[in-house]
Length: 220
Image (cartoon, rainbow, N blue to C red; front, top):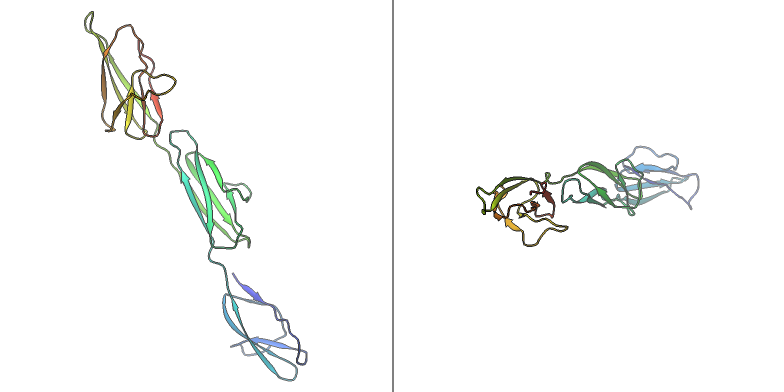
C-alpha cells in the first residue's frame, strides 16, 4: 500500500513547482502517492528559489489475525473460539464464517473448519481457516456372564473405546457418575466386575478423562 504527501505551500513567489529528489523535472504541486520511506522534496517558486524538505512515510505493522481454540471435550459438544489480532491500526473487528465484521471476538463452535478474518481501522484484512477438533466418540462394550450354578454370582466384562483415557468404570450408573468407579489408566485394558447378584439390575457405564460418559443398556 502507498501513503501520500500533499504539498501545502506559502511564501516565496507563486506559482510553485515540486519534485521528489532524484526526479529529472519539476511539476505543479499535487498529492504524491508514495511507498513507505524517507523522501527529500524540493519546492521551487517562480523566481527559481528552492526549498528542500525531508519527509518520512511510515506504515503500521502487518495485520495478523490470531486464534485460541478450546476444543469440545466430548463428541457433539460445543467448544469456544477466541479471535485477536496484532499489528495494523486499532480498533479491530472480526468476521466469523460469512457474518459481517463486528467487535465480538468469542464464538461458540463445534467440530469443523471455520474461515475467520480480522479488519483494522484502516480497512486492512487478514484471514485464516481454523480447524476445531474433538475426541472420537466414547463407547462401551459389555460381556455379561450368568452364574453357572444356583447360589453362585455372575460377572461382567467392560471395555471402552474412543474418548480420552484414563477411564473410570462402574456397574451402577445413577444420575451422576459414582466417584468410587474403578479407574483404568490403559486405554486398551478391559475390566471385569465379579460378584454380581442374580436377578439384580446393573447399569454399566464408563467416564473418560474429560467427563464424557458412555453406557450400555441395563443388565438384569
